[in-house]
Length: 68
Image (cartoon, rainbow, N blue to C red; front, side):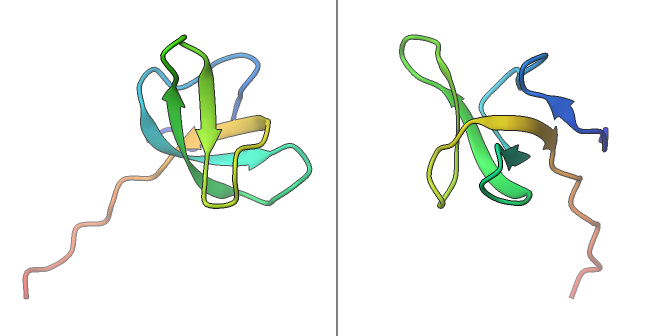
């Protein structure tokens, strides 16, 4: 996993996925879904709604948990 913030104006995720993103002056880091509509327009949306995103990064890999 690359832990660096990516400027949304420079690059967007390649596929639909969950990402950590920063909304422009509204919220701190928040997990959001990235997707494209039927016209190919990109969207970041979360439970808080959909706002312009300034930066995003992939979520870290899940930890390996011991078997119970």
